[in-house]
Image 1 (cartoon, rainbow, N blue to C red):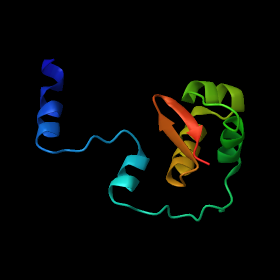
Image 2 (image 1 turned 60 degrees about the horizontal axis):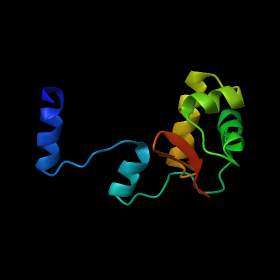
Image 3 (image 1 turned 45 degrees about the vertical axis):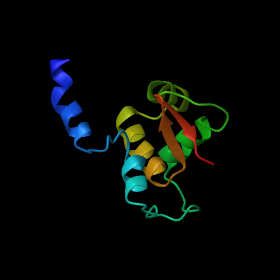
Image 4 (image 1 turned 90 degrees about the horizontal axis):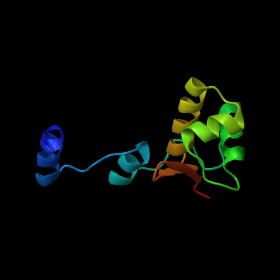
Amino acid sequence: SALSAGTNALIRLGAIPVTCAGDILELFDLVPAKPEGAPLGPDAQALLESLRDRALTADELMRVSGVQPAQASAALVELELGRRVALEDGVYRTSV
């Protein structure tokens, strides 16, 4: 469509699509700032516990964990940068 013409042109020129923070880390072969065993904040811990046995969308994850949207967003970034969760096809999964 006309709306995606610019994006498609950039991809043809070699631009790499980025859909999450993990894509950037992977692109530059960066190691997370926090070691794997670093303690998590309470919101991140609640989200991680909710993902132990299943994959969930962000909305489902907030509903199940009880974490508010603003805090959930920050905690998901923390978990994703720490490579503890990954967003794939619209759902979050534990990376471990």
